[in-house]
Length: 107
Picture (cartoon, rainbow, N blue to C red):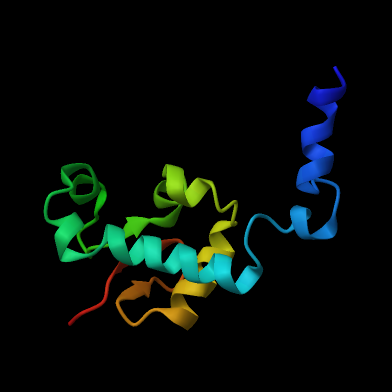
């Protein structure tokens, strides 16, 4: 039983750093943007029928959907923070005015 209680303490689960997530905020934001850029990359998007079906007439996909994908969900970032990260860090992606949808930027 002692071994079951030990891992959270060993991982620092009660520390302020653990409460912020696995990455610092800057690294986490970069990771989120890189992941979204991959989803919309020609290498992925061209063969991702599901993502293509989710795209609206303007080419946008809801951030709520993307944020539910496993790699994004693990980052535990609210949609508003993901949208802000895309706006500030990505030239390959565009976020709509409501900051609820994202699409590949015109190239």
